[in-house]
Image (cartoon, rainbow, N blue to C red; front, top):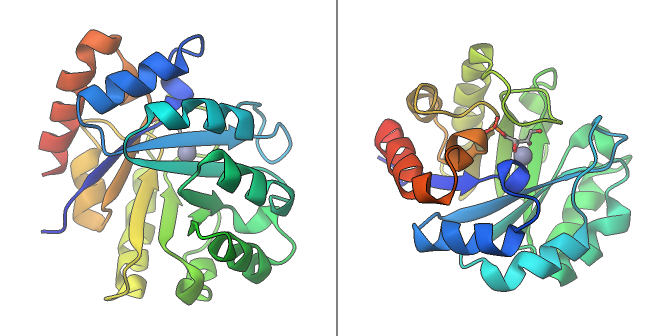
Length: 219
Ligand code: DX5
Ligand code: ZN
């Protein structure tokens, strides 16, 4: 079976202590840190920019995965890259020229990701697979943590898994991942699970147990 990566989303972290939260994640062996950058236009919520990424970078040991829920993302790609993002994931609806946006991410030396909203078909990723290092299947409508996993997206996860074939592209699932939904996402073909509320619930003393429970559910 392919190795599973858990990517805690700091959207559910303590906003007064991002450095401490990232150190606590590193201490329990979390693989990646997922940063949900929201602009208040593409999604109805406002969160982090490149300055936050720069501030947490020294406290993150693994891959720093920036999910850009930002209209016209091209204006911010270089800033997020310089701030220390390893991967930049964009939404196809947010950019007027997806090929150019994905090309810019790779020309910055970063891993290029494409996120598919629930209403966006898998074929949108299929057309640009050669420009991608990651496909993110959204299993909630983006904007907020703690929403319910949309089981009707399992078929899309399986469809993307077939499309990827033997290409070295990670298949991420984002939204509503818990100990109850992780196994279905992995069975459908996911190999990177974003976890916000399921990872951060209970505070730092609970992170080791939360991560172990997610890994066990995904195995
Ligand atoms: C939603 C974000 C997710 C969010 C997931 O727009 O993209 O990454 O943090 O949170 P949970 O795991 O609580 O659904
Ligand atoms: Zn996300």
